Image 1 (tube, helix red, strand yellow):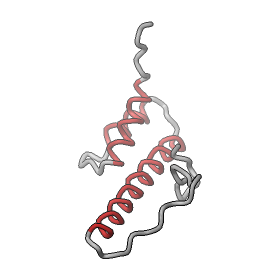
Image 2 (cartoon, helix red, strand yellow):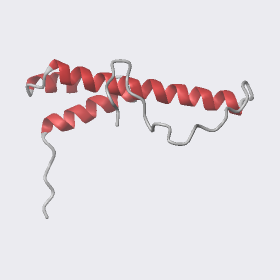
Image 3 (cartoon, rainbow, N blue to C red):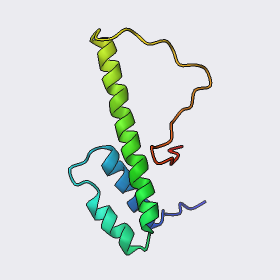
Image 4 (cartoon, rainbow, N blue to C red):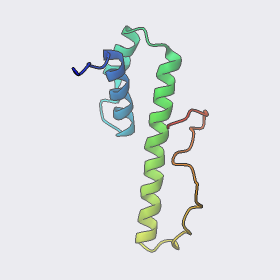
Amino acid sequence: MADTPLHPSIVAMVSLAANIAANHPKKGLCQLERLRGYGVSEEQIDMVVDIARHLRDEAGQMLDAEFAIEAKQVAVPPPPASGAACCTPTAKGNSCC
């Protein structure tokens, strides 16, 4: 079975999301222009940006909480309830899973 390369628009979407989630200094602006050039709708681009920002912000919150626990700034919270969601939707309601 031969490897099928990803469509350039998919590569650009993944790269845009990674740039945003990683707070990369280039901000994914090159990928944004490529996506527009490929004819990807603004709604689809907005969804990618929303999910990437949500994941970036969620990761920051989790790191801050872990730091507070390890620095003994707060008590250790109880373990999450079983069956808790592995990811939460964005404020706009987009699923990141």
